[in-house]
Image (cartoon, rainbow, N blue to C red; front, side):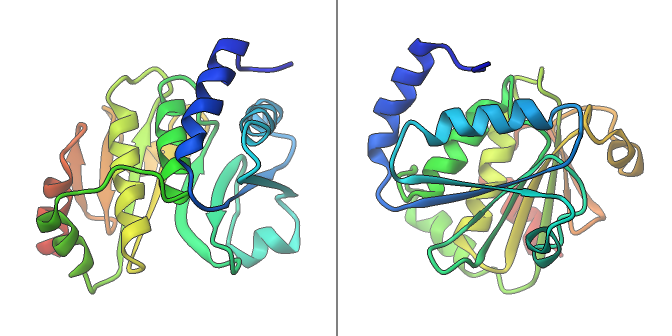
Length: 209
């Protein structure tokens, strides 16, 4: 059963006309509670543009091992050479997170918003390895913005990787990182931000690493 009604599909089909290059999505699944719904959602989305490709693989597959995927459902993206674009959705990107998913997908397709030159320069100047985790819930209205910004940073600089972690799907990770409010942003395991912070706040924290 489709998770998207026809009106939303029509809106997305129109929106996807801004995508300039092919988007390669990869979904890793097992028998998890939300895996079927995630598969259905991504099949719907990929069917709305001939520039969006979807590959579905089992969590036990060689492909999952290649990209160090060890839980499900997980969505990742690769470039036209099959290289990892360093962004992840851990958990179904439904509810408010659907907005972050569409924004990220559009960014991968080179159809996203262009940042001011000053911010572009700051992002490009990051030379150290940076790992950004954004903890969310599907009912959180402020979480999608934080996820979209983290993923944008990763797409702009190969030294940065970013992932969304849905707390309801992966409560053990939420416990490990002491998540009491969302969005919670963890940078390189020890630096924390709470709330939908602007990109320059991400960069201020990264500069202090």
